[in-house]
Length: 235
Image 1: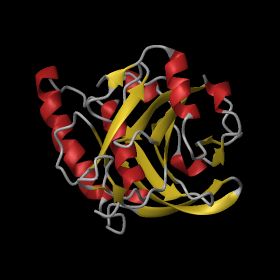
Image 2 (image 1 turned 135 degrees about the horizontal axis):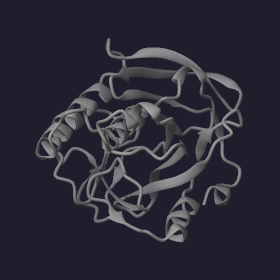
Image 3 (image 1 turned 180 degrees about the vertical axis):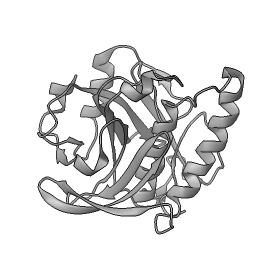
């Protein structure tokens, strides 16, 4: 797809995806193959290296906020990152999930097609579909269907990840509806879909970056987004 889903350097997905590496803290991540970085300062450093603005829920949300992870392209540039709001989700398939209220906001740099660092190939452009895929896989990473045996979850996750990629590649399809949400106070169109596990949305901001989000227990119809003025307050 134009702006196919980002890919970690250790992922076994198709070679058409954009190669990325990532730096994360101990939270679950939407990217496969990421290395754990338990020191909060290292996570913050990754966010500070980004050449684009970060987005989170606007001031209407008064709950806890925290940094999750950043992902870098093969050329070393920070390309996307996730910020959590609300409860810390548990990867469980029981009634506890119904009590969780969280939203994770994913910011993706708007990058054109460009050559890989070694000059042997091209890195795909990022797009709203990239944000939709990262959000979709992020929701899956904190989902465990009720009554599913742990030995089956890997197979289920692989299948659902492929489905999330296909859905992100078809934002004009029937699986998506259009939702208008405020971004820095400006009504902005987003692609939106629901599932039994939660909701996913994706769109672009006036500042030229793509924003995806996923959540459970919080209504997507009531969220708004704003540019983060000081990312260090989230650390």
